[in-house]
Image 1 (cartoon, rainbow, N blue to C red):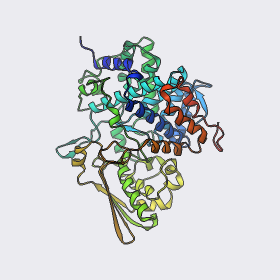
Image 2: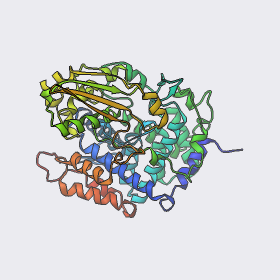
Image 3: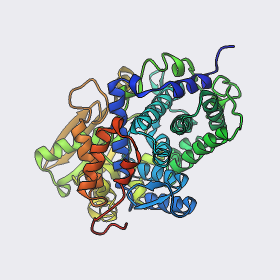
Image 4: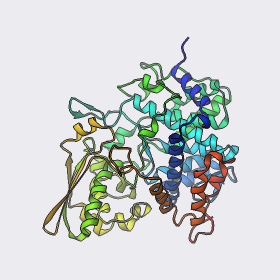
Length: 480
C-alpha cells in the first residue's frame, strides 16, 4: 500500500542530514535561531514573557536540564520550552513564515531537548530546518489569511497555527533520534491533540486576549506529549492528513486542502527559505511597510511628532477587523496590533525593540494624542498587487505637517524575500537586531558568544553551549 502523508513526513524527518542540506537552508536556519533567541532575550521583563517564565518555573521543578532564555535558571525541558516559546513570541517580533508564526512553536522543544541530551549543533540545525519545511508545506496546503477570490479578500472564518504541531513534534523526535515508525506515531498523536484554531475569534474580539492567536507554550507541550507518547508505545493515527472528511483538515476548519503541496519533492526541494521573513518592528506585520515608508519621510524631513497634523494610511485588505481597528489601548499587548497606535508610536522614531513596549511610551500623552490624528482605509490596489506576488504588503502613507502633505509608498515590507533590492534584511542587520534585543539582559561578551556559536553551529559538538551563553551574568540590574 502507498505510504500515508504522515509516513512520508516521518521518512523526511529521519532522512534529513546536515550533509544533504543546501547552504541556504543551513544559513536560514541559523538566522532563525539567532533572531528567535534575541526576541526572547528582549521579552524577559514584558508581562507575557514574565508569565511564561513563572509558569515555566512552576511546571519545570527545581534544578533542571534546560535553560530559560535570559533568566538565569535551569528547569525541566517542559518548563524551559514553555517559557521560551512565550518569550520568543512576546514582542511579536519573531520570524514569520506561512502559515504565519512558526518558530515560537517548533523551536523551543528542540532547543530544550538538544540542551538536555547534549545533541550536536548539526542535529539541532536538522531538527529546526525540517520543522520549518514541514510547517511551511502544511501551511501552503490549507487556507491562508491573505486568500482572495473574485477580486476580493476572503480571509478564512477558521484559522490558526495549530498545524505547526507536526513540525514541533518532528523536531523533538529528531533530537531523540527516533526511527520512522516512532516518528509517524508521534505525528499521528500530535494531529489528534493539536490546540483549537481560535485565531479568527481573536481577530474579532477586541481588546484581544493577551495569550495571542495561539499560546506558544501550550503547543510546545502538545508536541512533547505526542513525542513522548510515541516513544512510550502509543499508536498514532497515521491517516489524519490523508482524510479530508474526518481527519486533520476537518479539525482545523480549512476549506482548502492540497495535500500534494506537502509531499511534492519533499526532501529534495527545500522551499521555506524563499518565504522566510524577519520583522524589524515589534508590531504585527500588517503595519511594517507603512512604518518603513513613514520612517523614511520623517527622517528625511526631520518631522517631529508634535508637528504632525494628520496621518492617513492605506492598509492591507483583510485588516479591517477589531484587533487592528482597536484604539482602546489598556495593555502593552494592544500596542502590537492597533494600526492607529502603531503608527503613532512609529512616528516617535524610537529604535524598534523592547523600548516600543515601554509603558511611558505606549500610554504617553504624545502617542495617545497622535493616535487620534491617524485614519486608514484599504489600499485600492491591494488584491491586484498581492495576487501578483505573495510577498506584497501594499502600503501608502500620507503625512500632513508644516502645511504640506508628504507621501510614501511601498509594496514590500523590509525583512521579506521580495523581488526588489534592499528589502531583505542582511545578516549584519539581523546580528545588529540581536545585539539590540540582548542589550541589558546579557553582557555584550555573552551576546557576541551567542552570535559566534550560531555562526559555527554545524560544527558545534554540544548545542547546550549556545544556551549557556543566554544565562545573564555580570549585567547590572539583571537577576542571575
